[in-house]
Image 1: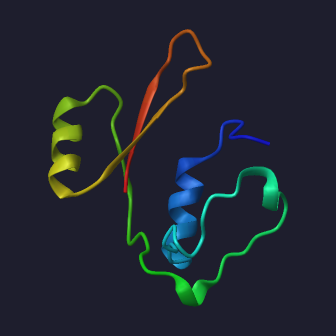
Image 2 (image 1 turned 90 degrees about the vertical axis):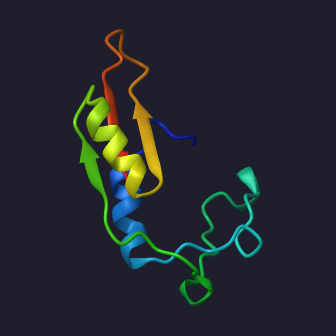
Length: 89
């Protein structure tokens, strides 16, 4: 399975309506649970309220995003150009 280019934006959008569980309640099991989701919304502790994109190659945009909270960075490393896209959560 693996990432295969998973979408950070879809994950952030999903977490707006599906609170994230603690690792103790939803530990990583690798291939042991392949195809079986054990998510329990009632155990959710945190959710994403909003996210926005930072313009590519914008140090001032990145500085502004970091001052507001956590920042997630996605790098399209499979292309020679490696265009950077930043998504702020």
